[in-house]
Image 1: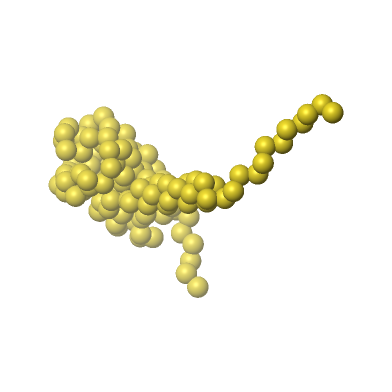
Image 2 (image 1 turned 90 degrees about the vertical axis):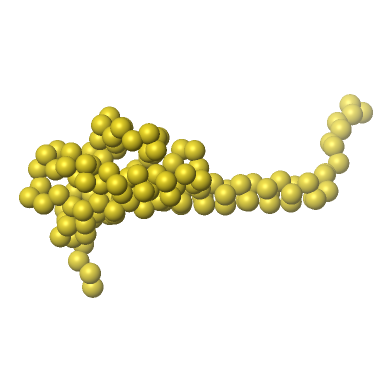
Length: 132
């Protein structure tokens, strides 16, 4: 049975907050633009952290943004180190998180199916209350 590593989760949450701020305020790469860091998963020994991100303008630019973030990983790690005050700053790996888009697509499919079902179902006759 695997052990639960609450410290690694707490550190990952802190990395997520700090990286979001560093990217927003200090990263000058125009290819990155507006991103959201959705999750950070750190290994239990805190040597590696996988950073999941989404884009506000869709998945079309995901490879370009991922490459820009990967190239900036050293800079981000350098800025992250003093903020985290860890003995070892984790290696950062960036991964595009498509779950938000998949969720939106599934929600759209469900909405379309419900609308189609309603349009094919016969409408009940209008209830007219005539004062008799």
